[in-house]
Length: 337
Image (cartoon, rainbow, N blue to C red):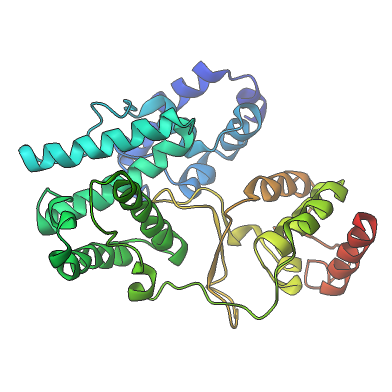
């Protein structure tokens, strides 16, 4: 089967999705998605066709979700995109500003691969807003006297999102993206204030301030430049980028990695089944997911692999001891100095 996938070109992969995956999505009760609305979850697709998933990643440098969206879902440009808004003048004004905003992002050079998930998050917020408050997002934002009421309206929408999204990282991402849309409207003079300015505080999503100072960007760049293996690159990403403790990185298991989550969230690490004190249960991989994917490719081929990202054949735990990981990192630091 792996050999079969390796011979597939792009058209073959699209045909496989249409002829095999889509029908199974419709009939499998374990599939959480409708094929005409969203790609299958990574967990579902990888559980059935892991060779196909790896082929998409290796050959086309694409996640299954992005490949599915690009080739199977309607992806019209900003003009004419279905925002799910009702008819009427108020909805038309909202739609016009949304379309113009995305057109401006394209003008600045943002690729469709970043616009598409951003647009999806805006659409979910806008539709919820319309369901709760009506189709005109802008009218109340032009009048300072309505500031408190409009902030409460945005808060009500975010509370609904808060109940439907599974991770704090996903919730923060929605808040950040909607705030960005409002901020650009404010900068362009279409509204008088941004109702999302301090929404994380009201939702309890503030990111804690840690005592340990961060490395300077130049220090991290030096470590990255000195790294010469998938193992060392993941050390830099895990410790410097994701902020994991050395013990957490040493014991990291593939089951904790959600590389293609639902809701267009960033990939994340899930520690909620363990005892992670003084830190969130999930850690967003805002960057570096490709380093983890490369590491998994390297270790998954080993005989008897049990799923640990840094496996050890001699340790009873199945993974390297934290002191070993620290020693690797110290060696890298010395080389980067």
